[in-house]
Length: 266
Image (cartoon, rainbow, N blue to C red):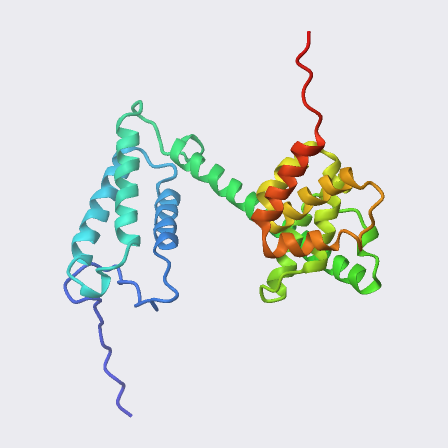
């Protein structure tokens, strides 16, 4: 049997030995991530290099960039340009350093700033995950309390405004009337975390206008008729839901009517 002839392959013929990256699926290709990977590869290679070695590596990167520019399929590739830019940055960094200095990631201010930003972003993502888990658990708890009919006896906690939003999202945008009424009554009576004036002030930006108007109207009606029960004040929820501006205006009117005039006598 005759041996198969040995074939020599060149990629691409007569040009650089660096193989162009395989075509990427557009939906999966993340340019920012590709550029970040390119910079990190350069930094690992540059570690311990002096100015002369960095200059040689920069020349090689420039040569590769010229070769890559001949390939149309690499026109949208960002990793190569990112690597070249990083070699240029490190070259300038060592050019300005004392003779004999070698590249060290630990003393590169740009690298350290990126690491700090990455750590902060990771911490933020972890905090967001913990908050999402807390909200989900509280949603389940409030759902159970609603089914037991004991929601009204439950004091609201910090963050329950976001829980209210999640309940509404899960319900497909349907307003959770019983939860809104529960929060409004708690806000009006300063129950739970609403005992804190700061929490009540913050609620202005966290609760919807109908809930805020309901709470304001309940607070003034309680001053007007201290012994009124929930059934007698049920109209306040209907008014605040259908006409929140009117309910807020009525609450403001009652505030003025029930507040004695300031004593200006000296």
